[in-house]
Image (cartoon, rainbow, N blue to C red):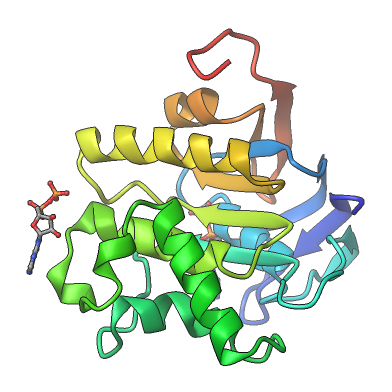
Length: 225
Ligand code: ADP
Ligand code: ADP
């Protein structure tokens, strides 16, 4: 696993005259927690979509983690709006990404139990998405991503829509889980305090077309150390 490397990556939406970003360079080592920060509209989600393979960069070169083992994916995404399917129970939502990975029914069930336990929601598998709180829905979104054992977990403003107390709890839960799993994290946020609290390294995007204007290890000691 070589981690993630972006070399001079650019992206322009097909319906747009100008590039969102150009000559973007940064990398994430295996197991590293990197926050990508920047103002609204600067292109953070677009970077994340490129890394996730949902869109192809218009220029440059990107090396993403390779898919090694059966039953895994190179990356998985957690969205701000969770994107849980309302007509499926939580277990089915968590197992959604496991289809097509070559796992048996019992292996999939075991995987679902494992990640529900990891996020502290073992007892909630038979509930429907409308029967849980916003914070719990974010935990389930995280569980769905973790179920495919990604090399790199991609998170797009995952805690921006929850109240401050719940957000603070979710941040600490995420750090505890990250420390237990051998997984890199790319965490997109507009909140610099959140980035500095969570990440080993903070990258800031700015300009138009955007570039990485700041890329440094978090310089302060903080509680998780
Ligand atoms: P951020 O995540 O930093 O808020 P985005 O990556 O969502 O920024 O958007 C970056 C720029 O690309 C914005 O100017 C946005 O309007 C534009 N954009 C985003 N999605 C699309 C799309 N599907 N088609 C055209 N332009 C888009
Ligand atoms: P939070 O403070 O995390 O936002 P809520 O006040 O929304 O929590 O919910 C508190 C508890 O009530 C949670 O354990 C949640 O599972 C449960 N709950 C929330 N909404 C519903 C619902 N629509 N049906 C059943 N239980 C619910």
